[in-house]
Length: 349
Image (tube, rainbow, N blue to C red; front, side, top):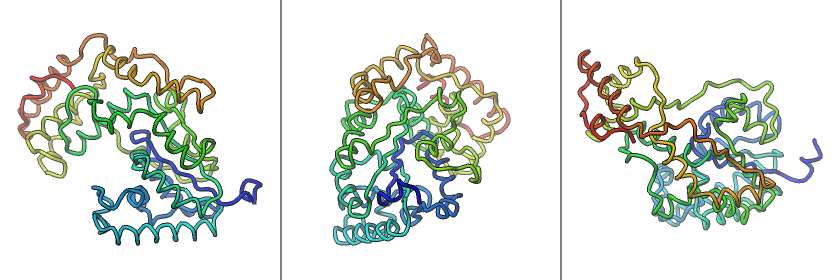
């Protein structure tokens, strides 16, 4: 047993954020759960198999609209919700008694409001002596565009450009200092480990899975590797799929599968769908939050670079629309499912 292990059981909470390789990290943790257990680290499958959505669900109020609640039959039922919460707390307590570390991972945790984070703290503190809250952070423009791509991939129709931040909940999602401040209030200032992560890290060979294990302090030398998951379609394809969503051609429809297979044949074009001014302007809205993040947890080190040169200077919409139209014409000629030409008309998003 190491000196750290004698300080009492540790709970590692990997809260995301989404689109920072969380699915690959969770797949790796699941694939290596027996190796983790052999090292004294518990991976509680009862919280959601790979993504521990149920921990976030039990922290929310009983009347919340949450898919994990509905799937486990305690949505809107205060008594059932309370019983489930108590059972989760008891099972985590038993794991803490037999393992020096319990590792929990769900990007749903980052979405929790302050009151739910406080509830989660009250649920976990009786069983654990120490906490480590790991949050991978992307520069806000990168996160917003990746989230938009995910919405489109999963069948939603996404508006063009960056999200509307007049919605307080949407704005808070990108306000890292505020979100992590709530976690610090519940679990302690030193427990919070903000980890800026993105293109620079990837260029340095720091894939999300390996980077996570380093931050978590876990030796993964003998762990089974997992493939990279959830790669996104390129920019013109996303715009075509967004239009397909708008006419009801959704994932799991065989026609949609045929469309995506056809689009996969084209040369990849990852031109960002917004221009440089828009990207810089979106990030600028969080300048105070990023400065607070740097001063509070990063020793004054700026969390993200200010390089927006990957974005085109001019609006890329017309060029992306032209490429989307070209692909649609090729697919139509080959007998692929017909899709509205709106994507070519309205331009990129």
